[in-house]
Length: 289
Ligand code: FE2
Image 1 (cartoon, rainbow, N blue to C red):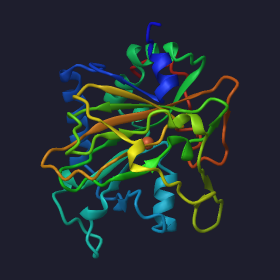
Image 2 (tube, helix red, strand yellow):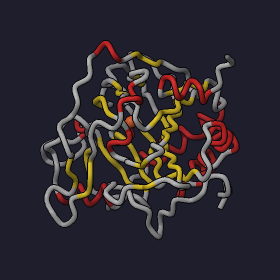
Image 3 (cartoon, rainbow, N blue to C red):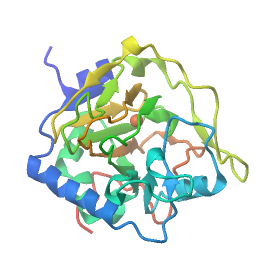
């Protein structure tokens, strides 16, 4: 049978789309990402984003994260900030990521999110009323870019019965050395293994409903890709990425799409639709404001 992206998506839980963006388009996005890193407003607090320490929860940090749905906010690498709260490394290489409303607030990211190519993929996967709900520019900077432990995106963004869809676009070549994605093919067929939910007015602000699942190393396969490749990620597929120990950056642009038609968006997700962060229908939203 002819292997469509839908067949492959259903079989493996991810699909690799080479040449999704042209090199010059990646260069434009990369310049925008670097520009953001070079111009972090003085007023921004220095908040670390790391997936390795689940106990590292503080109210201010959680608020900064939780209220980033309609803003462009800056999250640092754990290794970039000293005990005195000051940067230990070049500010241009200190960020873990920027998020979560680039698709709404930044003209370049908006343009590449609400594109005909993205719409075509959603059509092909059968989305009736897809909405982009969050976006992130991920730096994975040389030597400092931290690992992302095995997880399912649906742990953080739970929708049922139709799980969310991630677009992950390599802005640099992603290699085993600089921390490419590792996927567990077929793992999306085993449901959602745990959820992170809001814990209103209490400490901590988010709670997991159960401990992290343990996955055998052998279930993961590395997916090195060249710049411009898009990896489509099923919300329930288990994936991870390693610490970037190389001298090369591994920038990426990623955003998530949820089905709005006949689908429930959990009110317990950290990310909620807001006045400044509407979940706009991808098919009818223009690329330019
Ligand atoms: Fe993920």
